[in-house]
Length: 251
Image 1 (cartoon, rainbow, N blue to C red):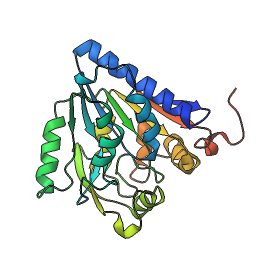
Image 2 (image 1 turned 120 degrees about the vertical axis):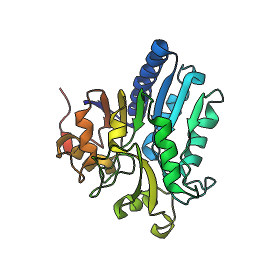
Image 3 (image 1 turned 60 degrees about the vertical axis):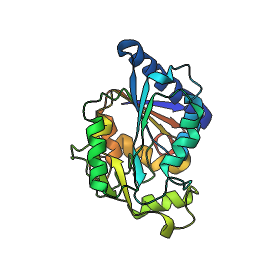
Image 4 (image 1 turned 90 degrees about the vertical axis):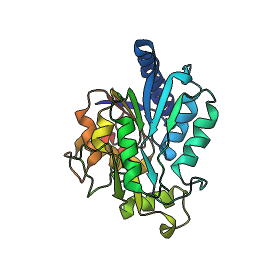
């Protein structure tokens, strides 16, 4: 894992989008298409706003996304379907293909099987992800993250700390409104990507950054598994690096 310290949130978004778009273009040049994974949340908004403007032949790009709430209507602005439509899909009319997770499927097990079959023989070129305040990647929440499962998509129960983060970010009005179940991409599937761009800005993510860099990889710190990936770029800004740098400035 490579750590890139940026002066502020804007330069972080620029760097993450520029690096990711370079890997997308390289994949298209080599094999005629690229497969990418997109995450959601406040940490991804600025990066996505840059990424959609990149000089990329988007008709040659296939997209998966990492998670979706179970039982939340796609029209709800808190759904990740709605998020991706707003911040990505509607801004790229020429997008090749996107595989939305259907959190309202009548049979969730069948939906997970469908997703697993779709991604089974794909090589993911770039995964754009965030890291939760509790150290989760996707919705693989501590302390019960299933870090050893080889399934690509799984159903999970969200930790209360994760659900509180969704309220604090303004997606939901209260804890009661946040769904308790979700479909998520597994940690090991995320780690299969050739390149990972992890965008982790803001002071509230300082503990998560420290977990990424120093904690033992375990169900209590799934984000620490990013250190296993030689193609992972962890983009942090000065606020999110607070527990790592203190008051020191890099030489």
